[in-house]
Image (spheres, rainbow, N blue to C red):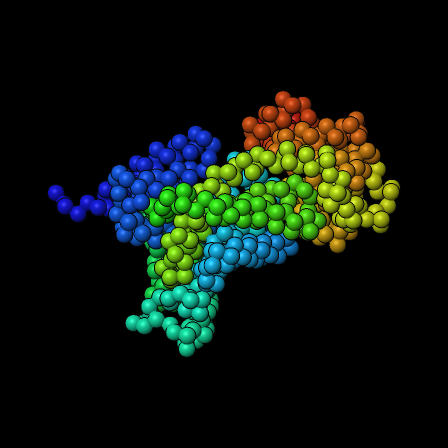
Length: 578
């Protein structure tokens, strides 16, 4: 019987406590990670009762960070980011700058050093991707334009934070901290710039190696293993890739294991087996993520809530008010609708995993104190807990603003050239046309086919960049949310023959159909459904003719098979099936 069972005790107590409080958080419709953090607080040395081994927890947390970053890399989509780059890139950069400056201003007022204030401000500037994806997914907003903008915004934040994690150790001495010891000595003021240059050189070399070699090598290895047909070996290949690349990046290139794991996720995503890799490693990644949040909770000292309530209130104000208002102002500045501004603002009104990672790194570099880390953790706990209420408040706040503020109504669409059809569009074009809401993959295919037959089409799309590209190609398009009467009026729905709606939330479809029929009682409405359940609900609503991708594919394939088997083509013409 082994006597060294500290790891087993930590896992048993940590997982058991996390299960209980994660379940309670989920029942209260809160993110489960709130429960995991509370579980860590309960088994921490700062609270009475069972105490977990903090040193072991920190080592497991390192693994948790690696798998978290690996997951971020696997979810990173350059195409998604490019689709919203004109708002996500400048918006996220400016929002990070504003939030960081607010954090610096608050902590400098408290008398902190510049280095501590900078790390603290950066920790408050980045929202949690885990919390955001869960919030958007629960509300069916992931595939919406608002959801894509919010996710793209956070992808930029993640990239900035990855860069910060790389540069912070190299600049720690310059900021008043202690640089990590490398090759037996730490960086000094005399060699700090050389250390910074060397760090950037190593990071550049690692990125080049991953893009040139890793991007080709890892997918080939995964293909070879997949051909064997062993599920265990395939899972092992993905996990080994993540851990080996993360460790190798640290040993060979001197960069953080977090950055290595991030790029490991990116190269695995390039493989044809990326979906399988994501599914089969998900349980392992979630287990280590839970350990990470539990270990973060173990570092939190609850006494700070009693000792420094005003400081905590200031931190929460920056996270939930300062960041939200800054993001909303930036979104409105880029002439996106009020609903988009509110959604992005609510998405950023919390902090999470990158804040914890950055705070832990700042503590290890002696840039911040345990007090600062506790304030960050308190801000995270409170903001994540209240974030769901921020999303719930979007609709009533939007309604209240529009009912009471003429300025807000003008601000949302004032002087926006994309909110109106260009003068070049001939009035004769806007009769018996097809109005298409959404220009995703389905919309693009339909629009192309209609234009080839010289059928007039007007596109209504929320993504301003798509509208700009369409107009550059000479296609009639208007920017805005088609659940607003002004957008459908601009698309001249009154004289349209048909309304074609891409897949979206049923509530939006219902509202859109009501407006369309009020303006044009005789219009024919065609709807795309993403699932058989959604198709059935839409049919019961009797909104319009419903099409579901899988049933249409089955009908067409059946038709082709019957024709090939010698049946009469006219008798086997495909019919809509649900």
